[in-house]
View 1: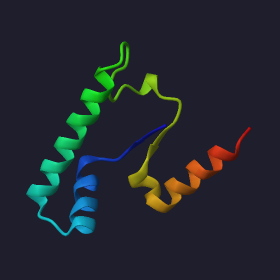
View 2: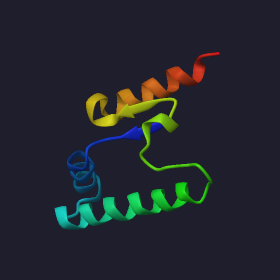
View 3: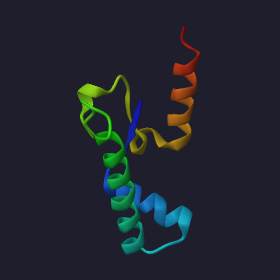
Length: 79
């Protein structure tokens, strides 16, 4: 499962929940993306942000956090 959102939406969410500036939020998004990219590159044949490597991709900006969680809960119940 890969959950994504446009950078502007991720920055806005961080600003809201962390009560921080846009500059700090953008920096955090870049740091987290770099950490995730480094983690994935550790494994052979794994590429960060390559849709063909994912079974499910959800854009949380389109559905919102609550509906994204509901979707994942539903998927977890499927046999």
